[in-house]
Structures are given as structure tokens and as C-alpha cells.
Amino acid sequence: MTVFWSIVTFWLNEKFMKLRKLIALFVLLPVIFANAQDKDEVIFTIDGENSYNSEFIRVYQKNKDIVVENEDKSFDDYFE
Image (cartoon, rainbow, N blue to C red):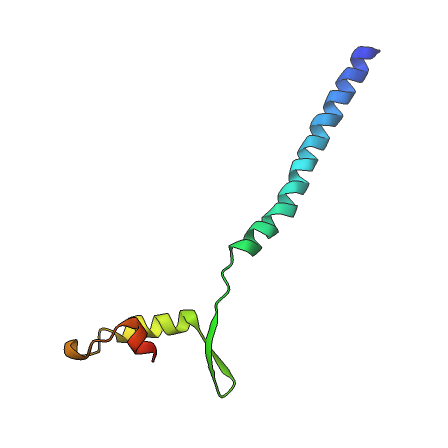
């Protein structure tokens, strides 16, 4: 009889251990993904329309090759 209960106890522990791992996975994954997202900062607003940091960097990188060499500005000068 004790062997039977040992087998039942082992089976239940194994089954619930998998369930606990699955629950932990479902609880932790959204937390990890929520923390992994970077918030895009608003750097200025014109007529109520926000301009975000990523948008500014994208436009700066796109247009810096168009600027004439002797007029080349640093990042800080471009922002002013």
C-alpha cells in the first residue's frame, strides 16, 4: 500500500510541477516583454503634434548626407 501511495504522490508532484512551471511562464513572459519596450520620448510639440526622438534621429540620419560638406553641422547644431 505504501508503494502505491508513493507512486501516486510522485505522479501528482510531477504533474503539478509542470503546471507550476507553466503558470510561472505565463506570469513572467508579459512582465519581461513589458519591461523590454523602450518608451519613445517626445522632444517637442508643434501645433499639438508630438515629435518623437526616434523620428528626429531617423530624419537627421536621412538628411545629413544631403548637407554640403562645408556646412556640415554637428548633431547639437542641427537640433537648434
